[in-house]
Image (cartoon, rainbow over all chains, first blue to last red; front, side):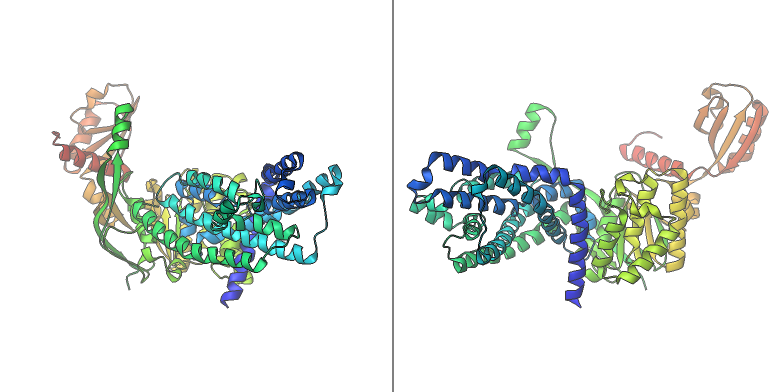
Length: 264
Length: 333
């Protein structure tokens, strides 16, 4: 009964949020276009030949950054920005009066936004294939399947990390600034600007101890068909999620108490 | 069985104060000054199932804070509160399924989609079967005189249509307790009357309990046999509207249409001038002196039309609170 109810709620949320995303299609095209950093980095790395110094062939470099581009497109999380606005404008209150935690709505909105990106990203890849046909390749079924699962796992990890930061909106009216601070380690430690393999060993070890490499480097390398310890990667994501989940839940409940105390 | 029970319900906030200017900003940065504000001060009342109760008070009186405590959006600072057998602030699913809150200045419908999309989400969230949800939407849409509007994006609806769609969304799960905060805010006269009629029908047909705040006394007089009057967080009156009028109005209102123009000073001594525009005059006259004052007015001035009645309740409340505030400041009457 609960599963059926949960499925109906999920379906209704996804359908309505997908319809909403289609209304914002022009905006989503712009968001998708703004996520081309890995493609820029591909140009930079291909031109400089720096990959060779790190033992990476031009093909490995191009496949890595193209995969990173796909990972980036489908792991975008903007929870904090909408939540901050909803909390400040009082739009959170009607959600709090329904027997459904508001975070489920935001999660559904993210999944719907991902779905609405699919045709846009396909067109971008097609255009890239026309400009530079040698860049595209057909990944193996294993790489594709593991890569797609890893992308969703990476998305969940990013979402949970942002839930933790988002709950700070209950204490600060401008918690989104903290998210901007997190953007710096995310950019440099996730593998968006350079594959982790090219990092000095000490920095790589440090990076691997953070959640960031599992958000881009791990799924990108899986998708690119590189030798990756998939079990370790998924276990690391699961461990981070298991750590962030109770923290996020605790902060959310404490934040709600504060929100209730201060005046919703 | 009482459905809403509040005992010594209180809510206070801690706010930081900042003086204007650079010095004020620096002081605010280095050493914040906080002040406790009492929004609701130990109010007690109970409401029986099926009652339609008006909640009155000037801006900042504590009405919305009280409504938010009753719905569980905010946590009381003190006192006891039970709504439909639950402590609202716990926001348990079983409690949330029994209540609804409509705020005239807030919306739950998705702005860029047709209202039907939001209604389908609500139906799923509240566990309504698709057939039952469709029937419920049809019934409520009929009562609210909504049709094709539900298929238009909410942003394209008029204010009245949007409020009716909001009401539909809020009532889809058949709540037994309705909290309505200014549901007719900004609506034109016709839309206001339709919303009022709908609320009266809904209360009659379903036996739902309704607590309504409104600045439009028309809403209150049309719908609420009982009113709670709150001022500066304290409950001033709990009873019928007629009793409130009697309590507040030791005066009656005299409306005159005069044949000639006169300065306002000419009416000094006849009563308190509430309105004087050209030939129209509205005075408040003590009940026990009504006959002699009216007779004197008719004798002194050439009167084309005369009407005696009770003053509008909002005027009475305004006079009451102004006089209380003046008394609190120590002004002479």
